[in-house]
Length: 176
View 1 (cartoon, helix red, strand yellow):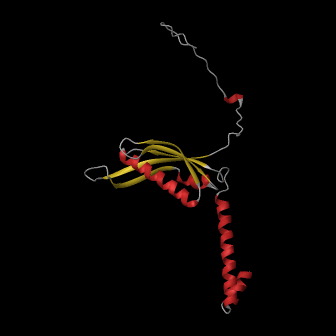
View 2 (cartoon, one colour):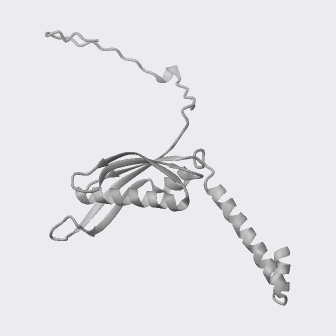
View 3 (cartoon, helix red, strand yellow):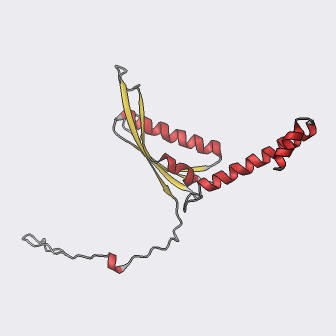
């Protein structure tokens, strides 16, 4: 209500227009903060994430696509001010990566990255094909929350089933 009155007065007075602009800016910033808090209200959303990129069907092109995705995620994280650490990277035969795993540390890392879960597809003229044909490449992205080692896990005894077997036969194969 106050802003509506200020808007009417701002049409006539430049000082009021400046005050209104400042108030609108602070309200928009607070609204953006509230929207982000609403989006990331899940159990692990505010925490860190472990991200794995696997090359899918498509051979060398898919391995190249997996490397492109990894590089994109790392640059995006750096631009957003998040910390990354590559835990594992398996290079492809000719180019790219078979798989890579990294951690993403910062506010709302898991909440943001969980939208990236799934298979990513790229259709392009292959730089690895001498005939320059169009190829479709796939890469799988897995995102998991990074949880503390202190997580208490309770296993109900009724959920367990323990079977013991003994092999039979000649040749010293009597093994429990």
